[in-house]
Image (cartoon, rainbow, N blue to C red; front, top):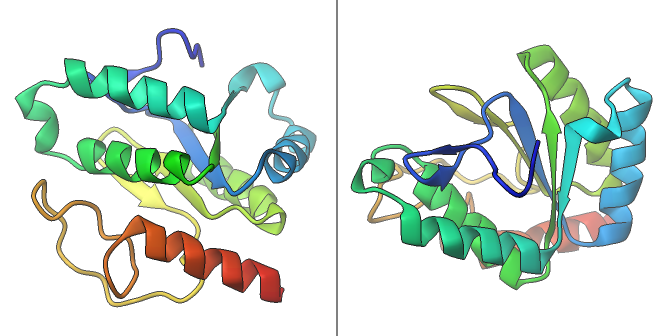
Amino acid sequence: MDKQSPPTSFGVFKPVGHVLIQFANLRDLEAAAESIERLGVALADMAMYTPRQMIEQIDKEMQAASGVSAIGQEINLSKAHRAAAEKGRHFLVVAAPTDEQAQRIADAARPWRAERAQHYGRFIIEELIEPAQPQPQVAESPDRGLDAQSPSGTEEERMVRDEAAHARR
């Protein structure tokens, strides 16, 4: 995937056929990338984003996003990714054309404290890693945003909870 011209839908990041994985730090991202590479995925099929790179990309996209982009969850996902990047999260985007490959990639990243892994399909974006303490799912909308699976519904609370769960392991 070319980070200079990432795949979009109506101006918003949507890497169909890829898994976007979120990590609390660069060390875990790099270790996960090595594990994923051992699955046979070439480094050329991965893109690493620092928190700053993700924030810059999302800010640029939000300026270009069309009104139609609010129909799906891409805007809400971008907002959630930006909130995570503001908290110092790093991101790895890995090519995964099939559901089976996507799950293998998420499974390889999980031991390296991957907080989220989202497989982007043409019509569906699937969460591949359950939150540390799942909550009942609530309806998502452009106004309400993405369901963060936390009691308050915020990404910040989910990240704090996931960090605590990883520390206990």
